[in-house]
Image (cartoon, rainbow, N blue to C red; front, side, top):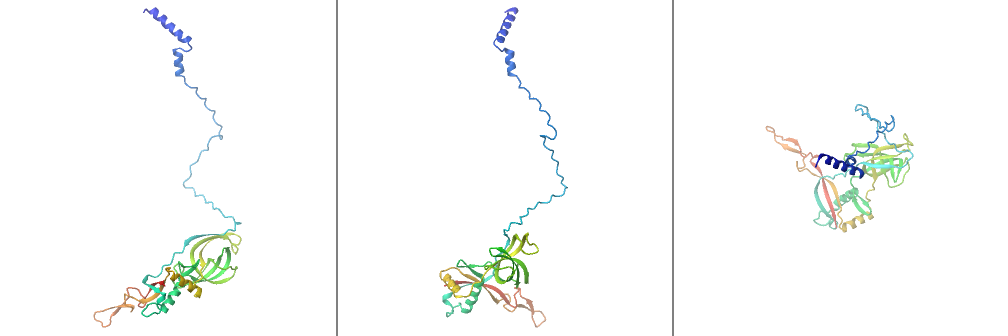
Length: 308
């Protein structure tokens, strides 16, 4: 093909493509066409729509005081919550266990004597209480309290001044005479200023929040931590209690009690010391008992289980 003819053919092809509404260059432009660029936003005015710059905290700045929520004084509700519950007191180490059969009291060649039964019955009444008609073991030993009622907290609970004696067996208070303000749960109703002599069992340390009705905080809500006691009536030595006890034993219920008895120390044989020979002397030396007994006697526990 000659050069003039080739130029004419190429010109005709370009004209045909242009008349079809596009052309080679038009299609290429549509493919590589870039989207319209977004116009830059106008700068925001200072102080509007711009987040404030957070300044770093000073590690050496003093700590901010905590905001305590004060309970409304007009709320007359009494709130009591436990802080430390009393642990069950452990009995003396049981040295001997025996089954006491009620049907063999004072029989020939029997160890069930009337004297032992009276001692075991007394200990049982001190260590148990009747709950819904059944005998339940108390977690501790009740103590005698001298109370002066101060403020009624509702539901038999009282803020009271108490006094009691500790012979040395109570580990939660000092030995001797004690006096303190306590929370007492009483069975019978009372009035402020009344004095009572009750037998109570220690529950533990509680926190009481209430509106005081006595000076010096009268009319204000106070929060106190006090020892709490619940009145516990000891088992009476009467016919209904004995009958209920006999019925429970006959039914086969395991009723037990622990007695405290004095027995001869096994380390020293009941003399309170040990003899040791001294060369060149006629009289032997006396060394203290290694069992730390009291004049040759030791207190041991005797567990008695009542049987029919």
